[in-house]
Structure formats: C-alpha cells, structure tokens
Image (tube, rainbow, N blue to C red; front, side, top):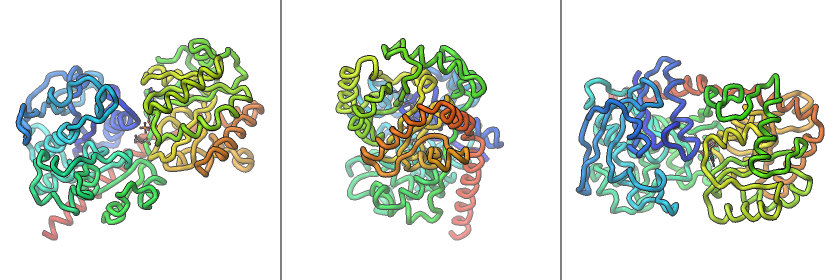
Amino acid sequence: MKILQTAAEAVPLVKTGGLADVVGALPDALARAGVTSRLLLPGFPAVRAALVAPRMVASLPCPWGGVAPTLVAGRLKPMGEAPAYVVVAPDLYERPGGPYSDPTGAAWADNHRRFAPLAWAARALARGTDTAWKPDVVHAHDWHAGLVPAALAHAGQPAASVMTIHNLAYQGLFPAQSFLDLDLPQAAWNVDGVEFWGQVSFMKAGLHHAQAVSTVSPSYALEILDPAMGCGLDGVLRAHRGGVAGILNGVDYGVWHPSIDSHLPHRFDVRDLRGKAACKAALQQAHHLRLDPRAMLMAVVSRLTSQKGLDLLLQVLPQVLQHGAQLVVLGQGDAALEAGFASAAQAYPGQAVLLRAHDEALAHRVFAAADVVLVPSRFEPCGLTQLYAMAYGALPLVHHVGGLADTVTDSTLESLEDDQATGFAFHRFEAGAFEAALRRAHLLWTRPEQWARVQHRAMQQRFDWDLAARHYVALYELALNRLGALATLA
Ligand code: ADP
Ligand code: GLC
C-alpha cells in the first residue's frame, strides 16, 4: 500500500503548530508498520531550499492565468533518503510572512489559490503522472489539503482519500467566486460538495468526499459531532457514512526526550532528575526570574489564540503568583494576550516573563525547566504540549476537553492513592475551576514525595506513534475497501 501525505507543514522545515510535528513523524511510523508514504508539500522557501535532485513531474493548472505551478519530485535534505513531492510556485509561496498569513498576521487574500495546487498535484500523482510512483491512498491533513478528496472524486477516483481534521475551527472559507480558480467541474459547486452557506469550504470539500475521516483524539471525534463544538460542520460529520475515527497523536521520542535532547543545557531522565533542576536554574537565570529551586515554575508554550484559553490565566494570575509561583510564557499571537502577559511581566519582575517568539530550541528548554505546563484550552483536538510536558517531567494542568482529557489523569485523592495521576485537570471552563486546579497543583508541590511519584508516573507514559500508525493503516484499508465497494455498485 502506497500513501501520499498531503499537508501544508512538516518538521523540521515548516512549522506553525502540532500539525507539523504529526506530518513529520507519521511517515517513519508508517514505514515501521510496512507502509510506504511520501510527502507532498507546498514549495515554501525552506522547503525549496531543502529540495535535492529535483525532477519535474508535471505542470499544474493555473485557471486565473499567470505562471503555472509545477509538481517536482526530489528529496528533502533534513528528511533523509525518502522521496517527496513539492509544488513549486514562487508567486504563491515565496513571500515574506508565515505560511498562511502576511507579516501583519492577516490571512493571505489568495489562500484558495495557494492551497488548491496541492489537490491538483495529488490528482496528477493518483492518475499515475509520475511513472516511478503512484499512490493508492491520499491522506489529506486539515483544510489546506481539503480539496484533495474533492479533486479525486471528480477525476473518477484514481486513488482513495482519507481526510484528517487537526483543527475544525480552521476551515478554509472563501467567497463564492473563488470557486472559478479551483479547476473543479461546475457540479462540485453544490451543497453536497464544496459549497457551504454560499461560500467555498475546503474543509467541507474534504469531509464530504473522503472515503474515511479521522481526527486526532477519541474525545474530539465525539465532541465535533455535537453542534456546540462542530463549528457548523457537525451535520456533515454526522452524515459521513464511515463516522469519524479518533486516532490519538503520538510523540516522536527521537526528538522529544530529555535524555538525548541537544537543545538542553543539561540532560536527564526519570532515574536522575539533577539535570532537570539544572535546566530550571539555567532558564531562571537566562530570563531574569528569581533563582529559586523551591518556586513552582509554571510554563506556557503556545500559540496565543482564543482556542488556548489563556485569557483565563490572565484572570487568575494575581492570585496564583501571590503564593510565590513563577510563570514563563513562550508564545506570540493575539495582540490583547501579548499585551496582557507583557504587563504581567512588568507587574511581577523576577516572577513572570513573556518570551514573545516562536523558537523551537527554547520550547525544548522551557519544557525541561518547567514544573507545571498550563494548557487551559477552550477546545483541543489533541494537543502535544501536555505530552511533551510529561516526557520532560513537568506536570500538565489542562482543561478536561478533547485530547487533553484523553491523555492527562487528574491528581485526586483516589488517583494519587492508586498511583494513576499524571497531572491536573479542571472541568468547567471558568476562572474559579482553573484557579482551584492551580491551587491543587501548588499544594502537591509542597509535598515533594507525592509530587515525585506523580512526576515519575508522567515521565513513564508512552504516547506511541507506532500504535497510531497501525490505526492509520487500518483506516487506509477501510478507505480502499469502501472505494472498491462503490466501484462494484457502479
Ligand atoms: P497547536 O497545533 O494547536 O498549536 P499542539 O499542542 O498540537 O497545538 O502543538 C503545538 C506545537 O507547537 C508544539 O510542538 C509546541 O512545542 C509548538 N509551539 C507552540 N508555541 C511555540 C513557540 N512559541 N515556540 C516554539 N514552539 C512552539
Ligand atoms: C491542531 C490542534 C492540536 C493538535 C495538532 C496536531 O493544531 O489544535 O490540538 O495536536 O493539530 O494534530
């Protein structure tokens, strides 16, 4: 079975969030499960710079005129020997700013043109345009690849498709007239297609046409079937013949393990945590926090968006810091959140700090230094930072929702007694509940022996990519079977 992984980001080349970690790790895990896959990525500057031995495969459509994008095969230097595909289109991808937005943070107005070529490239490959390799299944990740299942369906289904939702809140919605740029037949402009309340929806196109749909945790798979969390697409999801599979993301322990992490000033593991104490001291010193091993160091490593619920943290911060805890926030995004944490840092010098950056190496050092990692997300499809926290001996404190609920066991009297606790969780999304969980964390912190037991347990958790890969293989087989069944009916 040959799989084409289609996505907008993949570590170590392009990353704005967890999607990149997943797309970077999945192909190797699939290979260990005996399934070959190749990546298809947009030709962002870092991707083009990494492309070795490029070979032109096809010229792609350009319905709006201008320079046609091309599909190129090659290898991506930091990713080893595995062949990959890149859509080369300097007009579309080689711009200042991020993968999705301009330097001011506004989404590029032509994002439908920027991501539609992924679908045309996948369609060309599924049709056998590259005589060297033809996928059986195309795996489309998030709305950027959402047009892939639609393009395949309207091309006579030369391959099966699987659509994975990493975040239903981002849907790729565009004005109706952008449909003319998508190189799809008029029949696709349909409520049973890409049309969503008079707009083009890339996400809906994917969900509607894919033979199988999944998301990144079992709890989120259930939550999004409900109107309260379905972002307007719960009806489309409930109608899907195959339902929505919930496959929990894994951790790439080859990258995220404190005993081998070259970003850390000191290494450590569950048997010897002296290196963790040294990492904490180094971070306190580097960022002008009071050098104090007894202060509970809380950390946030996050995009600063409303999804992440950090407004709740700003509400309770004065009460929390009055017990002497420290806070480091590594993140950037919403101006109001940045301003809130910046003024907290001013109000509590030596106790709170905002590191306004996206910095991969620093993120590793923050997890290694932290005692608690806060993830109070309003919703969270899976979440990776709570998993990295556990691996690095920091206890996650999370809102009990989505993947956070599936991966963190709250410290209660019972779970402590039974040696099951791995962190802290609060159920109602409100300041009082969050503050109560923070208070519990602080109380446990004052009992070092109990803390150490929970910390050990957290560090021993394994969120295995090999298990996730086996589930994906089953999903690919399901998609192929469903396609086969449809062909028999036709
Ligand atoms: P999401 O994908 O919604 O942002 P995840 O928890 O799945 O949330 O993944 C976030 C990823 O982005 C993690 O790898 C995390 O370490 C990383 N990350 C978030 N903010 C930053 C930052 N400011 N600097 C470096 N890495 C960050
Ligand atoms: C999205 C989600 C996050 C998930 C990540 C990878 O960005 O917000 O919860 O972990 O995708 O699947």
